[in-house]
Each structure stands twice: as C-alpha cells, then as structure tokens.
Length: 218
Image (cartoon, rainbow, N blue to C red; front, side, top):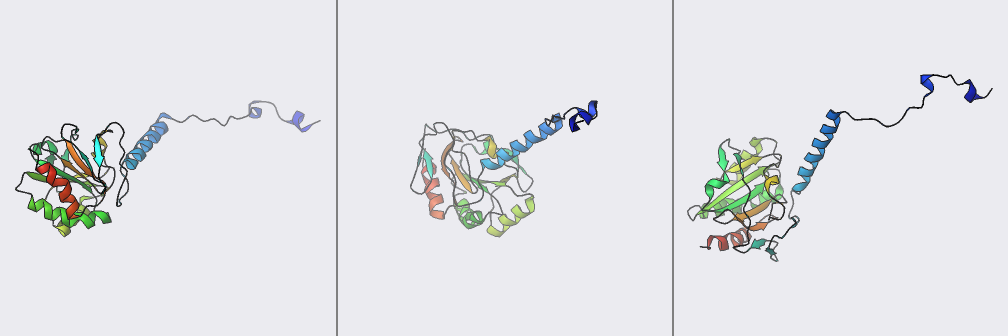
C-alpha cells in the first residue's frame, strides 16, 4: 500500500489555504500607519535645501539663490494656520492680515535652523514697527521644552505655532509654494497670499532679499 493510500481520511487531510483575512482593526491600523508615513514624507528632513515641486501651475520664478517668488495678482492664499503656540497661547495667522508675515518652519533639533536663528531674531526686531510680523511653525519637537530653550538661546521673541506631527504643514495645497523642507521660509503679502519661499537656511542678506520687495508693495 502506498503512503498516499495509508494517509488518514477526514478533515485533517484537507489542504490548508495560505490566504488570511485581516480584521477591520488590522486594516485600519495599516491605513493609519500609511497615512502617517505619507505625512512624514511631505516635509523633507532637516537640511540645507529641498525640492521645489508642488504640482499644478504655481506661477513662481526661482532665482539663482533658490528663492521662489510670485508676482502680485498670481499669488495663492496661505491656508488657515491656527492653534497653540509653544508658549501655550492661542494664535491665528488670520489676525495678522494687513501685515507682511514671515513664516518660518523650524525645529530645535535642526542644525540649519540654528544657523539662521540669529538672523531671524535680528530682522524680526528691526521690522517690528514696519508692518511686519514674524511667526514660526515648530515641528517634530516631541515636547515644547526644547523649543522654548531654542527661542531663549537665540533671543527669538516672536510666537511659534506648535506642530509636532506636521498637521499644519499638510494644510498647504499642492500647486502652492508650500514648505517642503526644514527649515523653510515663506513671505506672505498683506492679503495673506504667498509671495516668496525658500527651502533652505537663510542668511540675513537672503532673508532681507525675500522680505524687502513685499514690504515695498502698496
């Protein structure tokens, strides 16, 4: 008698399929993980520069220094950016409409952010009475303690929204000059529209080169 014929009959002889069905909880967890990964990839790691894409017709012109600018009449509004600051206060970017806003994305762990911090501190004070408001977006800091220490070390006196997971950054639509690196800097005109963007650490000269033309607009 062959080995096959000696095999016992019954349910145990039925071949098992390798296909498994994941529970809804497992599928939901996988979807959330994929979403978090996509969010993390939206903003490049801390470095000296980033990509300039964004899809759509952005109407921007990128200079030799990597700064992108958009002419008046072709700009898109910045998204709603509001929430708690690292100091625990409430801030809404819409409250600064009528002013030129310099929006800087930074993290206390980011070396290029440290390199540019002294210039932002200096220029923000120099332009405080000229209709210009500086606002930071602190991201990827797991607590506000390190961020507050960073501001103290570099004498940063303007507020920064606390955005540890990058949710605020995800509000920028494709087709706009969205921040895609850390650090990134945007200059918003008095109507709250994006006039200029840089995806690298800025010197005082480059920061002023972005800022002055927008301040001069009437």
